[in-house]
Length: 402
Image (cartoon, rainbow, N blue to C red; front, side, top):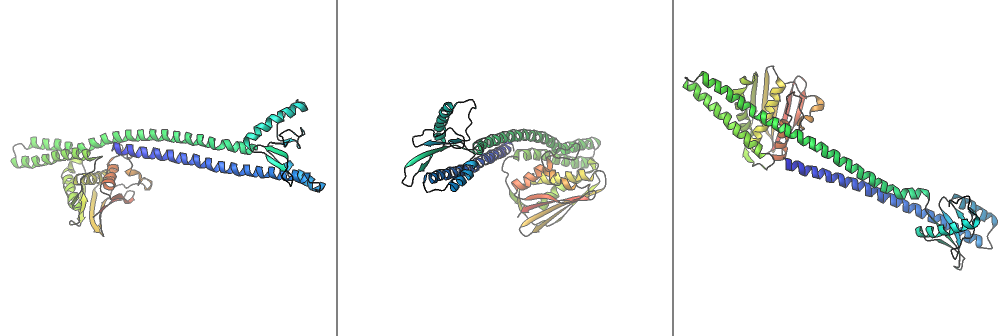
């Protein structure tokens, strides 16, 4: 069981890492794609600006057209831009003509501004190739150096922040999951110890009762013989309990057997011991004795015992009935066990199979969880609450492959 839990934990942790990584790299890809599109848009704007300058250099261009170009292109540029001659020398230190969106110290002289802008030209050249302003003949007149806008610079760092957040998420999830799993495993160990004590409790209590009967009837051979047989049954049960726990975590051997006969055997064992438990309960069975399924008898008996104990706890102090029904439907064996106990609250039907869950003050919380594991993992069947009505009773259903 511990090995299986470890493998399951590793799978879930690995899934968390993969999901977090996918989130991070998907965000990176999406953001980088967006950055590239914005950069292309800004390049197109610069290219349009260059085309405007080329148009301005044409002696046939009209002044109104030039005013329209500069008003609608230059004024809308929101990223760093510097205009140079063909030799990369600053053309003007005038804002809006020689450069745009470059922070300049207000105390700088024109010469200092020119030197500062010249340094910025080399910095901008590292980001993008300059856009060339040429004549119709291809002669380079000017160059436009440009950088990224503030929104692009922010977007560049955004995916890295996302990756950091994703890894923080993974780390927190991993630590939280590890803590939950440690708590769950601790609860399982506590529950297993209580389940062991509970499993041993019935035969030990019976043995103590048979011992008293022996003392009272030591001179009655027939009574002694009958009691001796029951003691042997309880000793066999103790041995069976040991074998059951040894099978947890390993693949059990499945042999074709009759579920009806196995259930009947468990019922007979409980019938003799119900008076000692202080219960006035009738346990019945009907159905198809001939139908068979591949079963591990010892583990399947454990499931039936857990269901009977669950029903006995639900019936509490009133007169009760526990009824089993075994039927073959198509290629499935369907087993139902009903009681007239206190029922299960609607919101608790799924929780009752969860390890550690119990509504009883002294509950161990593993009986039904182990039953579910035995039926579904080992026998490839199903077990669930078919229906339950408060203060009227509950019906469990088991489906086994034929």
